Image (cartoon, rainbow over all chains, first blue to last red; front, side):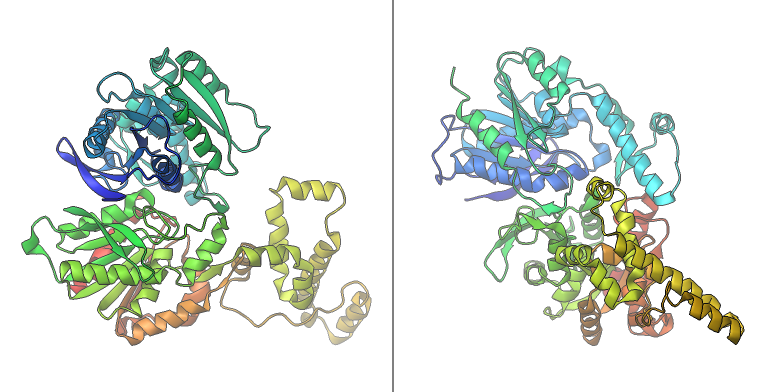
Length: 280
Length: 351
């Protein structure tokens, strides 16, 4: 059937996914047959990261694996409204995507790969059976920091428009407590989302992770310092976890001056890890 | 109901999109909406704006298609990898994706059986719609949101940065541009390094300052008695000689023009041309501007193309509204509502 976009069920909702069929254009990876399911980053980061995830998925399928990109509840083309989604519903979506790709591809083995908060959700998802191999590209480790970044984004946008400092972060949190939403670049962040995100701390949740895992630290220059947070995360996850470094000229989730659609070092790191996945 | 669809463009690339249909087929109207994405971004748009608009229209019985242009999102085609983003903007502003929009309009018409189309989009989507409408036979009208009326080019920006002295000598009226260039460099570490190491072109800045000072003097001179004026002229001859006449007046605010030029942006003459073609075909045009973009729109297009004569343009099916306190992506609640209302009012006219 070839590469294709289609909707698949997740409870009463439908989610949109894009399947890349394995192609024999390059030497197949030893880990085949298997499928890699990609989990996207959030809000506007999803838009800017789309070309990179598409390219990585294409590279994976060129090496003989199934690859699937999909949109979480209330994101991208999937059904539902953003403000109705929660961390729990997003985790359900990842399981549904894995079930769908297993049925479509006829493979049992699924590997999860995510970028930014997508990586965080991939790490927390229960997709049935033992924990899967996991590749995380610049994961959000601490939800508290990420949730505060969202509020900061609101405040920055307000300041640009009104040319003056608006409400404080505490006032925004108070609004959430009163049942209001906070508009983060057009997405209406709810209290349930805010609390769900804040509760996440991967350094605790992933301690002694039982499967192989890869954490990719994306830096701008070869001399850039390694992320202390990601180094500590890999140490906490245990001996099956690998930290890789990818030098990319622009962020993978924000618009730069150059229109880049490939992150070659990230692709190399991921493909290399997949190749060695079953080696002792 | 939403369907994942694919169709081909004139180059044979497979383009992927989502077709939004009314849940009850019996409520489907004879007008379809082709909602075009901004350009280098994927088909959902900022804050999923495109998804929300399409769902609202489908609920009104209007089948709506949104899709990824060639090489963008899920669609096949040249991906423009490694191009300067400004050049990709320039490609879009020159109608680079209009062939895809034409293919999409034909697909929407064939797939749903609608009789007429409304085309709409934000920024690059707006201009792509205008270009495509000249090749589609069944367009009723347009919802044109923050229409890009200038054209971007990284080459122009680089040329300007590397040839500012030449620009100043040939067009002293562009002094504001040179000064804006220097102001922009205040945030550039490399520019500071050059300044501190003596490698900056001070003479250029001095020349810009001289021209600005002379302009101030020229404003005062005519108010002086003739004898005093002649004395001042003699005194200033060596220090502040007269400058060449300014460039012809333009409807663009000089400060805005300087900023735009520094950003590598100049008026896009194709916009007025394609706008006239669309009107000559009897298509209606509803312009919607964010308050933050409106001055650029008026300076580079509205003041000349619309002449401020609202009544005359209304009679030709052209309307313009400005949404206050709004950014370019219309992300705030009041601007989201205003955008939905503008789109839905055009569709109601068509239906």
